Length: 166
Image (tube, rainbow, N blue to C red; front, side, top):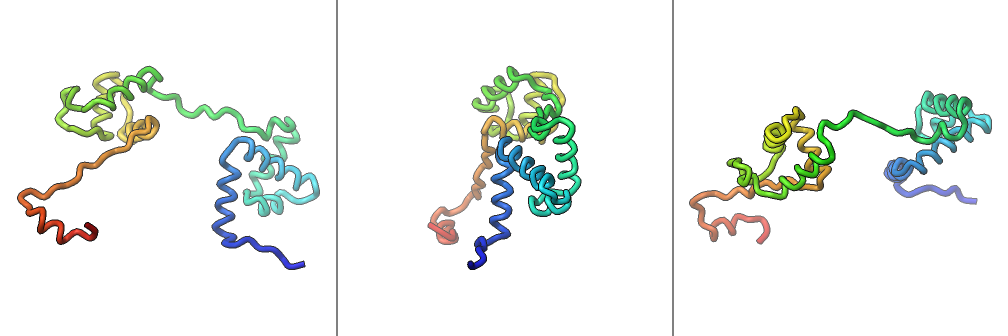
């Protein structure tokens, strides 16, 4: 029988790993496969090489499985750092972002990270970073709009002749 191969194996391998990591259940199944390979007699190094995991990761999975069973392979709650803004404050920011910054007395007519930072500091007296403000835009599903630059005193007909596509 002819040996089967996967087309574009390297790219497809990355896609497969992304598919495995997309949900809690698939990551749990991935860990189960690792423990199964070790239970079938493979070393953690061999099983890790096959599954694309570090041998130390495989050892941790096996030790957790030995100590606490199947539930040890499930993902626990990842708490992370608590937010400095409450859900109510985020809701208020969401409403504020739907309005023009000029309505709040700002000179800018578009929201950006720095302006949102200033707005949050003024309104909620909370210290956060510009990057956090950018992440708030993303979390609230806002896209940042850049103003289209317009050259002053230009001839529109002349300008059209220099454009790549009309």
